[in-house]
Image 1: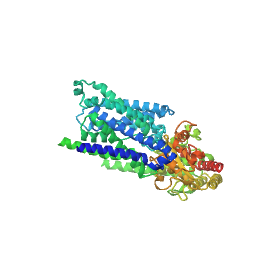
Image 2: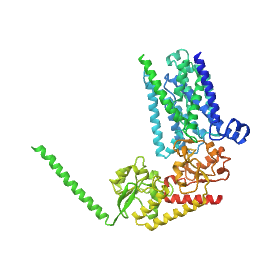
Image 3: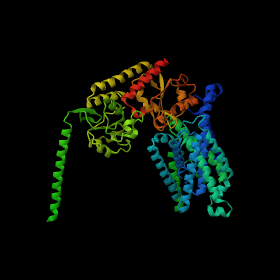
Image 4: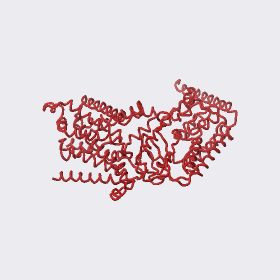
Length: 321
Length: 319
């Protein structure tokens, strides 16, 4: 009963944050001006609606990616930024900038997605070759791989005088999102629905290869499919808004603490909480230094690092107990 | 008994060699600098340097255009951070050594260039001490913290270079050109509001921290000045915030153009596509000034003079 209230409460809070996101900003937009002023209405459609939608989509993308990756790797600390997926997407963006600077966003996203896919498969491949007894080794391997890829990206960017562009992109945020810049994120909605439909497969995959195979799951196909979906989510999100760290880690962990590990039952709540958290971070970033902004990813990074440590400490207590 | 002798001998040998070397080097400098030396005021106090040095290592990119005007060809340069346009001959000349960027400068190369004078400072200011051990090093780079601000310190830098290279008259002409352009621009600007922006990675951001110096001597008001408006770097700025501020003018530094293909104007396409700007004064009156994309790597007195001419033209055409 308590759990249900908590979850419903989070849904109400998220809805309130959506409303706030639509109404907070530098331009004079309020319920009153929306009804009476065509200029305010126009700006609402140009700026507020796209920004809010992109926050919702990116929140869903990263939270759902986190769930899928945690099931595939059977590890609670894995998500796109701790598994190197985001860093590979970044390398893909740099490759696109270097090889074909005049590419539109769509081909760029395809390249970023392809890199994210290859990188994540590499990570999954490495995991199969090492012992997974140690829960902490898995994210460490991912963070390490991500750091190596990130370093290569920075080196290449420095060599070709693209550091400025890369850092502008990497510190990504939603400040620049307006109509015409966020539309590719609709792809995430398709992926989220797909994950929901395939949820039971991921739940079973989360039991481990042997058990999953015994109950008749094509384990390898499920892993490849899962990685592909995560790659699309991460690739698209990276190109449109940049890195969104830790969201995929915090949210699925909190939800499975409350509800357990049934992916299909958890997924809607993961999405709601992911959206709520990202909206909250973006709203903080939008207001504290107005009219300038602090990217949501920076606030999320600070928050996420703290929660990451908290989860690690919890984990340790479990092991000791 | 034998063992103690050797170190003493070695020590003696060292002392002899060092004193020989020392006398050598003093001989060298006196013979090379048979000409006079001059004392120059720098950011780190007065420094005595040879007048008309033959081998100059120029690290402060803001000095390059003046050096070129004086006919001075440096023996080593930080090639990766130089403006790509206008210095192709120096960049492509393999006889001019490449020190690398200020992030990881190769001081060995500076040493190898056997300079009589190093023009350091600016992005290389943290290396002043190390450079000073190689050769006399001047930090006369313009700076926001200098008395009178950046633009004033550009003039002092030029005057100092004039003294070092015995081109005082030419330096005075260059300074006069800036003064004239500056006055002209100051006259045409009558309190209009302006948004100073940097377009980088396709994002339109507040550029006050980078190009705010330009409007120092002008009669313009930065719409985001003060408070958080001065925050710059990886903070963002929503297009609707610019629309809400509705400045009369926009001055743009196109960082993407400097990094990309020649002739490309990425910033213009980004700004033109920005629906949120449609109703602003600067967009509807077409009052947008695009700076030379190399302004950021030039930042020289010549670049400022050109920019003031450009602004004076733009503002007088508008009024």
